[in-house]
Length: 143
Image 1: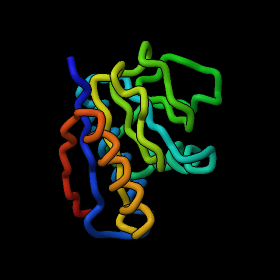
Image 2 (image 1 turned 90 degrees about the horizontal axis):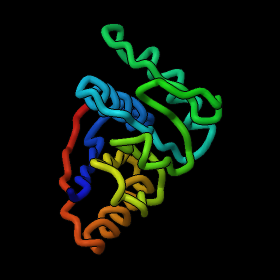
Image 3 (image 1 turned 90 degrees about the vertical axis):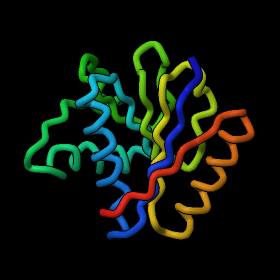
Image 4 (image 1 turned 30 degrees about the horizontal axis):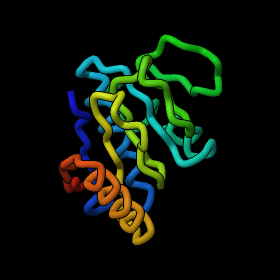
């Protein structure tokens, strides 16, 4: 089964809106029953998303853990390293680099913010997946 790659592009909104967008995509994947790895650019961003997942919506609860905590069992793990495909079905990525070992995952969701540098990074990642023979799908999201 081929990996499905989707790009969620923040069309409008605040400069940090891509973090909220990542939370929304994570919520959808969690509700669908997937094991999720939320891949961040660095530890600082992982900490931001750890906090934001508790507060971005009053109507949602997404059990999660930081990969650095050493714990396991939550359906959502947040970190900045690439995870093992044994424990993860869906990667939601905010990192500047593509998921190079995508074949072991059912799905990769790339989050792209609305700032110029984020758009440029998103274009490079899109080309990477296309060059690998995949056909990424783009979704413009208004926040």
